[in-house]
Length: 207
Image (cartoon, rainbow, N blue to C red; front, top):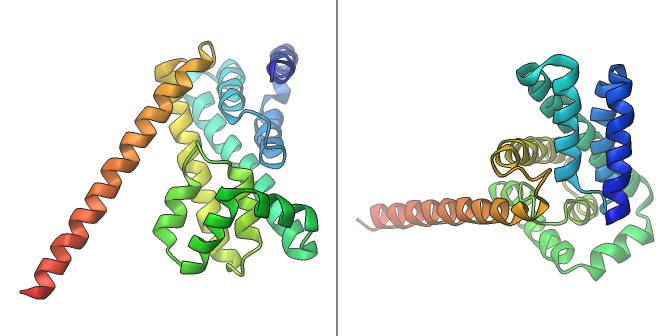
């Protein structure tokens, strides 16, 4: 993975020296990450925020970085979705069948539980590319796919932006463990709230 971070450092230097290309790369890099799973989304978002802040200022640059990163990531995932829908490539089917997460997610999509699907797609710790392959192999409607993918991309990128700035992931990559801990805590709390609501609903129906 070292060479990837070296490449991103060179790209950041190039953008800084040619700041007018910052918006283009802010879309392109997340777009490529959605297609090439090995690219680190956390580092890409940090890079986008850095160069966009130089180009447009801290607050406007951060907002633009979020918008453009979300757009690029969504377009990359939608491209893969379209390719799989049109070709049903055996390569993608094989990757999903080899992935425990992929097969598991197909079953969840089949259940039609939108809330659960969104929660899973919004998890930055799960392989988003594999989940995208999996959902593309189902009969999910395009409108629902767009809603789930776009919303989950916004959530993940906002999550990485704000927690990334708090834990300084760009300079201390191991701090991603703290991000994972915070996200896990959020999911646990969310699950407890849902369980509590179901329990209250059941008690109300029984009365």
